[in-house]
Structure formats: structure tokens, C-alpha cells
Length: 256
Image 1 (cartoon, one colour):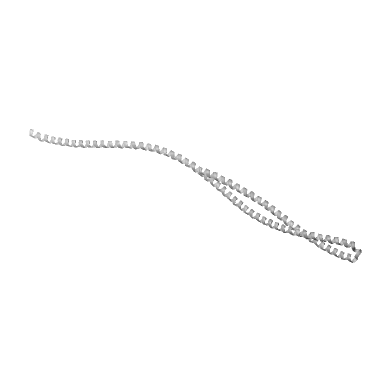
Image 2: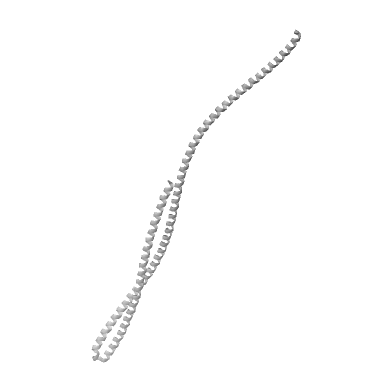
């Protein structure tokens, strides 16, 4: 019974270890997928950083062009002043060009500031992505170790289950052998009981024989005593006969 309970417990442990290993394997797969997504996002962020750098260069180019345009507009205004009334129209155009150059320069500076802020944010995002990727790798390594540990545990539980099954089989075999031994002992007990009865009968017969032998011995002793008495009587009879013969011999001469 205990062996069967051990088999049930072993099967439960194997099932629990298998479920735990499967869950850790799924978690590891999810972490690997998250790691891939984080790396892909990090690559995208790095690409955005490169694009922001190019935008910054473009903004610098616009700012430089705006400065040059402003200088050209300033030179045009100077030349228009020198031309006096003939350069009034040219002066108006130069003033508009200078205004546009100023606005372009202002926009270029704003773009440069936005690009700088964007690059700062992208760099921070890149560092966060790298940190997240490192953490995902660490968690993945821990999950892999846990998966390996659970796999070893699963193998150990399986081995224990096999040992329990083998032990249960041996226990059942021993139980069968013990049952056979019990039956054999019962048979031996039955035989012993029969032998005991036979021995009791034999002892009774032996006691009867001993009693008979005792009676025979007593009878023999009585016969021996009778024989001894007969021998004594015969001896006395012989003595009397010899004495009678002697007397007869003595009497005959006297009669003659």
C-alpha cells in the first residue's frame, strides 16, 4: 500500500515538475521575444539618432545660408544706398531678403534646438533600451538557469519515479513471496500438527508397550521367584530322598 502511495506521489511530482519546466520554458521564450523587440527598438532608436544628426547638419547648413544671405542683403542695401534714387527698388528687395534671411536663421536655430533636444531624448532612450536589453538578457539567463534546474529536477523526479516503481515492483514481489511463504508455513504447520498427532499416538503406543514390558518384567520376576522356589523344593526333595535311601540301607542289615 505504501509503495502504491509512493508511486502516486512520484507521479504527481513528475507532473508538477513538468508543468513548472513548461512554464519556465514559455517565460524564457517570451523573454527572448521581448529581448528581440528591445534590440529592434534600440536599433530603430540608433537609426533615429543618425537621422537627427543629419537633420542637425541640415539645420546648420540652413543657418549658414541664412547668415550668408543676410550678409548679401546687407551688402545689397549698402550698394543701394550708394546708388541713391536708382537703387531704391533694389534696396526694398535687399531689405526683404534680409528679413527672410533673419527668419530663416531663426527657424534654423529653432530646428537646431529641436534637433538637440531630440538627440538628447534619443540618446536617453538608447541608454534605456540598452539597459532594458541588458536586464532582459539577465532575466533570460536566470530563466535559462531556472529552466536547466527544473529540467534537472524533472530528470531527478523521473529517476525517483523509476526507483519508486522499481521499489514498488520489488515490494509486490516480496509481498507475493511472503504470501507464498505464509502458505508454505501454513502447510508446514498443518504437517507439524499431523506429525504432532502422530507423535502423540506413537508416544501413547510406546507408553502402552512400556507398560506391557513392565508387566512382562513383573511376570518374569514372579516366574523367576517360582523357579527359585521350585529349585529349593527339588533340592529339599533330593536331600530327603537320599536320607530315606540311607535309612533303608541301614534297616536292611538289621532285619537280616
